[in-house]
Length: 308
Ligand SMILES: [Zn+2]
Image (cartoon, rainbow, N blue to C red; front, side, top):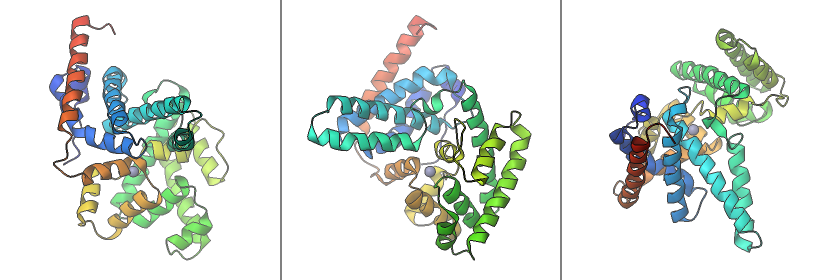
């Protein structure tokens, strides 16, 4: 399956066909995302159903700095956190729940920032984060195009993984710690250059400065969180398909494995689980029930006009 992306204008116009294609395209990977966190199959389906309804309700405020898949994963993540929190409250005093649930919630919170996540875009911190996502992504893309996959992994390990120079040079077989510092220095220089074009308020430069001084960011967003939440270095689904089929070789394959196994990217793991799922798996009944709730929602919107 290719990386199909929906036409946002058609989604905003509440076009039936476009929404149903969204469901059939993204249902599997959202279920796979939830499956790594929520053991109960029925609860997972509820989460995914709420995710699509949330996507419908919020589509007018869709922010083009994110991909549509990121938008969906962001909502799915929030619904999952809501579910785990509810279960934690309900499950207090019960052995199994109070043992499992808090861990899962904390882990999820670490994956992103606040539960509001990427769906809200209004305030200044979000604007800053969006700009930073854009700059980091630009850097990743040009580094990928140059075939500099070791550089890409080193920077992801440092910026997103929080690795220290000492561990990083050994992992990538570099000469010594100084070589890592050099890679980082040049990357930051390039990032500052890219940022200058778009960063009127200087926020990105401040966040980058915090990275170069290895201090904890005092800002509402920092580079590590932004890297993960913005899926700055996530390979397109196409690369995951090739990785799975075993026909991705050399440096790109090294990168994909590193991203999945060492950076433990939750979004790419969900995509991979979805790709691994047998083609004929029984998503059909669930898709049918999704279709019904979506069509019902679209119908109610078209009757009530703009009111909601
Ligand atoms: Zn990823």
